[in-house]
Length: 256
Image (cartoon, one colour):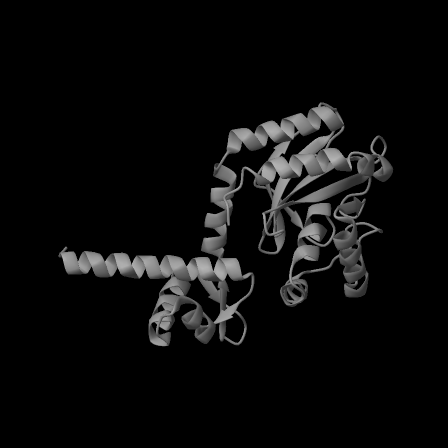
């Protein structure tokens, strides 16, 4: 490969990475003119980059084909990076939290239309829900899921809710958009989310956000347990411990 080819290849790679970073940071789908302006690149160049990245699964187009957003391959890459970095430190934070509360605690992230368990430390009780890291659970009926939905910009949340199957898992599952929006407003006001046996009967949970320095929710720490020994009132008592663990967890995440 000649020096010119090396420079051109490196330049194309840098532009592609900058484009992916721009879309990932925007938190919404972007049209070609927006990307061209943000990157200070000609629209034909941005169009070629988007076509290539879409073909490779790093970008996807929204219905109508005018705006690009994060593709499954880029999402998978980001989650893999989050899971692999500072694993020992994160595990220690969860272990300390479980020792303090006495119940199972999880480190979770938003993954497409679901909640992904990045890490998990089980409590030493015979009666518990067993989910391995990598497991996925619904958004609309779990503490972490509702927390992530509440933190999204309204336009993005609406599109995500449009794509969700708001099925009732239990008699207490919220299945109407109006009820969920009321719940999201409460979560934003109080700073935590509860699962009132909405996913599984007999199981309650509480989740708090893991945020960056700009206040953006990057992940969540959740604690769940059988309602027979862990009431919602007891869960809220442990809120300071969860929030302190979330601050420590935020320090293990890459700076935005």
